[in-house]
Image (cartoon, rainbow, N blue to C red; front, side, top):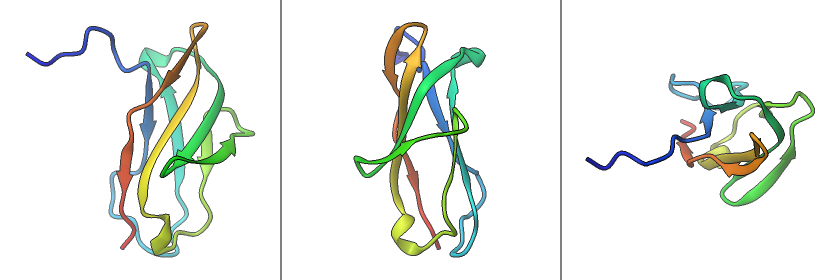
Length: 92
């Protein structure tokens, strides 16, 4: 049935609404079922956006069209290094 054997330990959350130029957006890297996550790093098209001083959230600067692309995060979850699935973000 295509169900993965293990859950996605990390999930990158982005706003569900349409994203427009000039919006400010917060990305959130969440552990499965609220599992604590440490050492979170965010990525945009495989380029590191750095770690998050707030732990699991990253505020993007006011959006521009070049912020479109694929985002992901990784971090320590339950003593394992895990990566989230990639999320496509489109700025209009």
